[in-house]
Image (cartoon, rainbow, N blue to C red; front, side):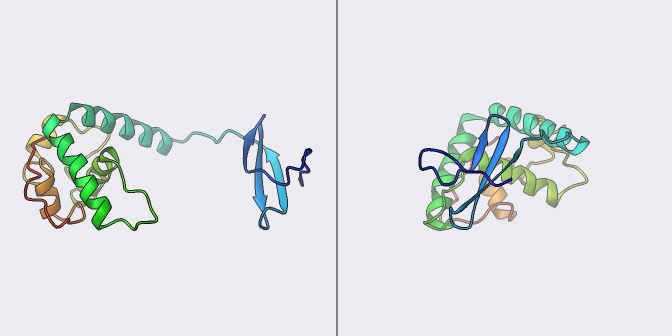
Length: 152
């Protein structure tokens, strides 16, 4: 339905009071609809369990590994990310790395049940250090990465 606001407000985008509003035609038209909570599926549950597991793994990572992720995120942000975009955080890079590893070795890597010891055994020489991850083309290369050797 077309929405008309009071007090000189022409359009709004967002959700208020169980209604979703969208701004169209360069702010000249506002359309509203009732907010409907999406139906949860098995895939949503899988993504949630993967996200919880990866969060636990990130918390279990060593201080050196996390410091290397932060260093890599700064280098990657200045060398590989356009100036008009925000660079990914250390945590976002860790998530990207884990998904890239799963894609490269889907037989052995299940992100929903991955443990820290799996990274030390199955991931040895692959993702146990950021240097290894860059050498295995799981992360974008940066000009200097030989010092990113903190073990998970």
